[in-house]
Amino acid sequence: MKSKVLIYGSGWRVEGYLRIMKTLAHSYEVTAVITTNNTKNLLYTEQGFTCVATLEEGLAIEEPDFILLCINMKFQAAKVLELLDIGIPILVETPLGTSWQELQKIQNHPQSRRYLQVAEQYRYRPLSQAQLTIINQGIIGQPHTAQISVTNNYHAFSLMKSYLGTPGRLHSVSTERFFSPTRSGFSREKDTMGTEKQKEQRVLALVEFENGHGIYDFESNQHRSYTRFSSLDVRGEKGEIRDEFVRYISADGPAEGKLIRIERGINENMEGFGLKGIQFNGQWVYQNPWPNVAFSDDDLATATVLQKMCEFYQAGYSFYGVDDAVEDMEFTLLLEQALENEEKMFALP
Image (cartoon, rainbow, N blue to C red):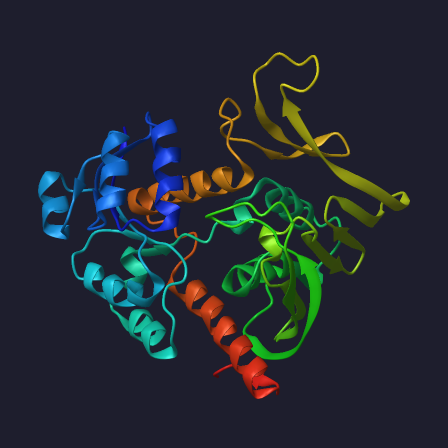
């Protein structure tokens, strides 16, 4: 049975959702897209989607199984509060809100845990899933430190929590920043081919939890750079994961291994094109649920979020609820305050 989705908004990520749901048309039906943007209205209509201007019009077409909210972050919290009163499950693009007051209003809403989930997709990317499998198998022991240099703000904090497993409450954030020369990368609008010289801000932060530490390392536009690597390092009692490499103490003594992507369509492989999965020491640690589709890693993560949202509205299985999302944004606000005040900032008790 198809899940019926009403999309509210025409933010940048809506196009990705529409493309994924159109590809997985056997699983999803977009009942309508609510937008007042004439350009996006024309674009979506040409792609075969129904566009309307108001929530009332969207709900009148057919009651959805859930609403996907993807609007400007400045207005998102107010719209979340409005939609919670309707009584239909909501999948909200990040961030949930942009201020302490907005976050507390959503967190205190009596229906927020019943109807609300947040589309934080990074931990569902194939490499992250494989790394988390290694951790969950106990290969590196209990993680105590996670260094994230992959993405920024609430996304990075979400990854940090995922890799540490059970870090407890956020305690404090202390920061340093400096500027260094680099070359331009790409953006949503254009590709500079790295021809422009520029300076980027690099932010380093020590994040203290009840049970563990995180290290935040991000240079502005790093995730769209041709000159900077993404990197991740997780240390545990008996091992360490550094990107695709794993060093650990096995039953036979010190050992090393590598996470290997298994792709179709390379050289003489004629199975089509797409990721089969990721192996470690000859065993699957991630298997792609959609191996016959040429999805990017972020597409796979987003498709996984949609799948989990279906499990949420059908059976109530929460995968990223209001409390997680509020804590992620709490970190972001503390990070900004620590940079502005040049002092260590402590989380609210």
